[in-house]
Image 1 (cartoon, rainbow, N blue to C red):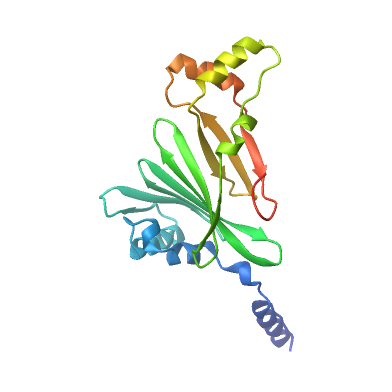
Image 2 (cartoon, rainbow, N blue to C red):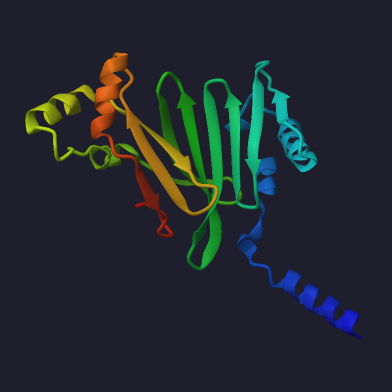
Length: 207
């Protein structure tokens, strides 16, 4: 009798699962091929299978390069697409609606640059978040620095590239910035005015 009762509770729980509970593995596998043209659906499935087996999840993509999935949870995935790019995915909650997919794609040159895109669970693009708007937020004058020196260093930051990273643990986005055309000693100096920032998800965007 007790077992029957437990079974009924489990059955009801399954039917009451929210629509936004579609797991990341399913979303990753259903991703349109055009999003990563050099990685086939079978290869995306292989990566998930390797993660399940707890072995290194890597495949040779259509360019003959290595694609590696390093993290996969119910709501997060991180994939090194090739030597020069990576992708992070996270399900973000939206009030009274299904969760949406946040995608962070980063180009990994000498300095990384990211874009932040949003999709519904059928992979229809529904928006993006411009990172250039946060450039001033990432620059801060130290108390001990003169205004003149601060302005000199600030001028060296243009053009500046912003890298974004999703958290595996919570609904936050971390931003960092660097200028690509600088000598090594200049990059060290620039770091003194760059302040890494963490943005929180408000149900519509990061702020």
